[in-house]
Picture 1 (cartoon, rainbow, N blue to C red):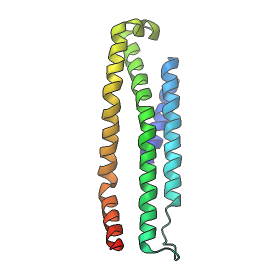
Picture 2: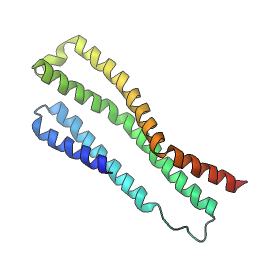
Picture 3: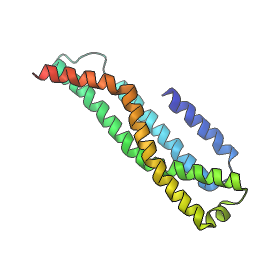
Picture 4: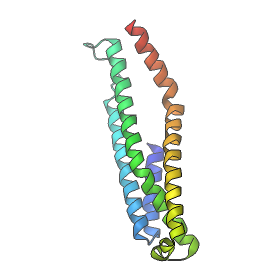
Length: 156
């Protein structure tokens, strides 16, 4: 949550220093995506009860927490596949325009730039997806594996 707030604030600050509508559009999508993720994360945090419901067995409670976490993560992965191309395109346009000193129209008029943009998006989207997956497993993987093992032990 901390990093989400910090990154979103940086996007908002950047929004006011950039005068390229295509980058504004990409930043707005990123800002709303981050806000949605933070709200969704907060909901998961608030819906995760510290106490075990007496009417449920321990296995049911563990399974409920495990399932809600998995659903939350899968939803974020799918949403990321929509946002990564937009973020890569916005960054490409910003870097290209600032680096070349040309307008967006002139910069993207070059057919080679369009090809490079397509290759960039095709390369960065899978890299971002698998990097996010790796980070998720690095942060939550051990806990989820232990949780799944406990559920499996209780099933026996």
